[in-house]
Image (cartoon, rainbow, N blue to C red; front, side):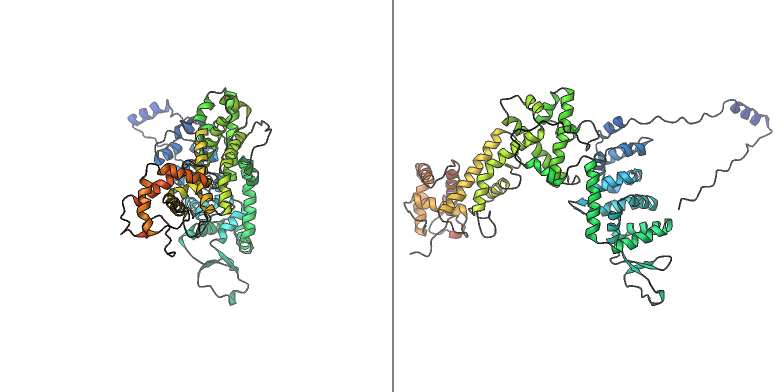
Length: 547
């Protein structure tokens, strides 16, 4: 039902006064009629977008977005990703006026990015949007929800409503939960939980029943009979189709970004529709980034091609990692890994100049070469984990008891290996990662070779074995009375040389392993009294059973 027509403005004839003064005043102004208000020219979209970048706070950004006289037109033309970032910065609860400017299609695009958690819609992410639409009034709430996919709308209704068809009104017994009957008395709409989050749905159904009772009835009947799994599958199908039109890439196709590169890669000019603004590099590259500096040295056409290529690579990585754009932390992790990988790929292509590499090789291939190099370095460590060398009480990793080394082990054996909190971006960083892998492999393999029990930590077992060797014991059978001898042995100037020789005999290769073990022994034994110390606080395994 359309809004009732407003009555036309009542127009009265001008009042005429007989006095000379009023007559002269009227005659004076009648010679100079009031000029009609001139139509303001449209605001330039690019200049308006640039002004948004100058906003210092969410409040300033909101004011800058709504200040132009044609703000609704500008917001309608704004790329969805930019609009999403602005809403995040302002806060959805303060964006009522912006939400009112959204068309149904624009809202659907935002919902595609905002309310999904991987392959299923998230009620926790949907509720704030329903509340924001509700604050804009029943008409905005109703028209915008009707513009959503029918399946997503039914899924939303099912989260709050149950429907019972009344076949015989005389025999109908009202439920105990909050409910309301439809005007024709043929259906009972039940709100089982009757929580605050149901309010937008109540307002929407009330508005729709007044506007189009037949459509409201169909929506209630179809939603009550549908299966959640079918609705989610259909809604996901439509969402994926729209994302594909916008340049997003299918998950299984996107996994290629982490696959080893082909032997003879084909150079391709990638194009993406994800970015409506002319410079995706500005979005994804930090101001002092070396990659951005390289982009700036290239001719304009080549830089544009690389920026499109960059958009393609970002799409691949975000899709392969199933990162939603609302998850800003995960997005930043992906972008940091991509920047580091591309820079590492450029270094691995030396001595060829980096600018020439950028011209000849797609960024995806550069990243894949770097990613393959890192995975090749961590492959021996994954082999040790699979063999059970780091096995402990509850997992294949918790046999390594020192927190720093355990964190290092977890980061190097993760799906995306990292060292010192980030993906290596230079050959020097890759070499450091390789040394860390060699250290951990030595610790795990030699402890396993020395028949470490699962209930004894790797460092405890290796320190005990080293201590026994320094005091001339062939078996790992440390006694309480050996403590004083071990204290003296580790203070010997030749202790490090003797420990290195023992480590090599066990098959060790890492130059870092012996200093780690000796440091641990010094920290534990340098300032203790062997006669009074509590053995439980020492990182050593004592044989208390054998006499």
